[in-house]
Amino acid sequence: MIDKLFEVGLLYDFYSELLTPHQKRICRLYFEDNYTLAEIAGETGISRQAVHDTVSRSERSLRGYEEKLGLAKRFRRREEEIAKAAAAVDHIIDTHKDDAGLISELGAVKKILARIED
Image (cartoon, rainbow, N blue to C red; front, side):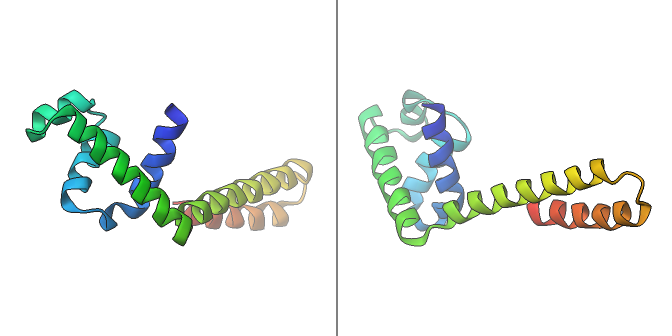
């Protein structure tokens, strides 16, 4: 369940601007503010079932956008590649501690990777 919420939350981060204002408000309360369906119903003045339907419809829309555009998939892949590169740099640093020039250059590479990751 948490993995699903994380996944849909990531899709929401990428594609929320493509939702209607109503869907966006409901999803913000649900995914970002962690409101329950009942809390959202009370906040918005609609039924719990209407909130559930809106969240479900919005989730389908978000998944459809991801299927067509693939931004979240590319983001996750990029994050994985950055982590692999950083691990490789760390390994080289650990195995070549006596080469100050190399360590300095690899330190610069690590800073670049950190900036890319942000």
